[in-house]
Image (cartoon, rainbow, N blue to C red):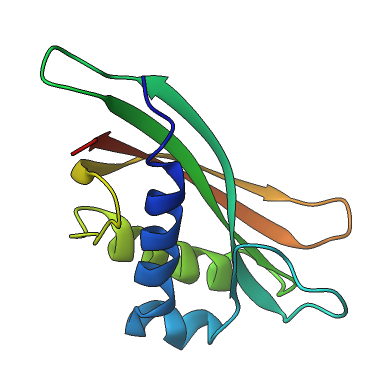
Length: 135
């Protein structure tokens, strides 16, 4: 197994999201790897948790990365969050990510969970799976 590709994948995902015009139309530049201090914008995207499973074989090291990207909004209803979540999904599924190490075999949407947070905000957590091989 290799966890060595995790940073490369995270950087490529962040790059893909921050350069996507459709997502920018929904959230502007409010795409975070780490939430900033102070007041947050009314809608934003954040990179979240990751689980990595070994997918090495006789040809070399590999891993399946299951990661979450979350959209959060203080808008009434889920409409704005759903538009932004759709833009996140469109930006990532089958995207030709440019990794600094290894290569992407495939990237797929796995599931999404929409919920109301205790502070009244809306949240949509999207889980994706990315299969990587070390090279």
